[in-house]
Image (cartoon, rainbow, N blue to C red; front, side):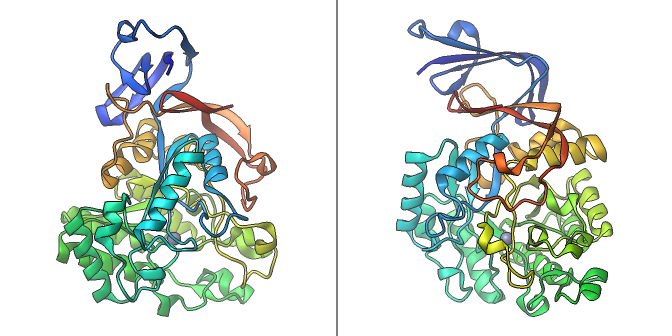
Length: 428
Ligand SMILES: [Zn+2]
């Protein structure tokens, strides 16, 4: 293995409250203290000039769909990992709505083996909460934890039976894995496809009311309190969810929430052209909801940023709005969108907090060894140019799918190099 020196970058390592211009030294895939500690056996030392760039711990996206096993026409672990690297991500956490569902240790082993053989970034699997994501019978949560899942979730689905969910939280606590939840009340949401409001009424599309999310967020707050275990609410989209989480966290409840870029970049008026690249779950919401999400990000109520990268093939998305699958790809646009919106446009947080929400925050929640540039840490590093202006070109994406509503958008800020175990896996 070689050694690497990243010179003169602005190091932002929120886990160590570090923000200064300095060099970063890497040998044998780990961060080391000083140039003098590079072993003499290293004949080749790669030097990277990071002047004008931010040197951040490798970013973590804790919510992606890599579609394997089962749906490799949408994405594979290999193509999804390349998309992650091109977005600046060194670690991704993949969701369990695959076929077969990882509700058993052997599917987890398959994903881990496949990832270590073929993925250029770290791929960490989640296990299902319930067998076949059906919400009825618990998956073997202890065996899944032993098999190496970083969390359990039924993402894409939501356990409706509160007693089943309570037992899941208790088991998760017992075996020490966090629980993530896609918050959707099936009765309230019904066949809703867009935010219930002006546009759903005008267009005659079935509405997905904000309360359909909030009622499950409330349920999760109560269960986190009852079972004294952390529950993390995925892709939050409504003002009411932010208010509930804020109040619960102030009381010390172990609850948290994440935000996806599309929920702050777009409102539900985008669906008026019936373009299915605006069909996401939960749906695009109102201006008022966006304001609340931004407020939640600013005051720390919402602590994690992620993409909910959800690839679908063109033939699947090119159908009537009602029947198209939910979801858009996001790995290659999320960092640019968030820097552009949160740091430059709305000035809600600074770049250091944005990096924290992509590194130390998810690492802490998932209890994984990542998200810092501490001496001895794994050398996963992302180089970011926060001022670089670029245009989104979907046809150049590394993802195997093209379902993005952001094609042609002008953004400011992006990753320019991604380093995994000390090795550059992607650069601009
Ligand atoms: Zn989901």
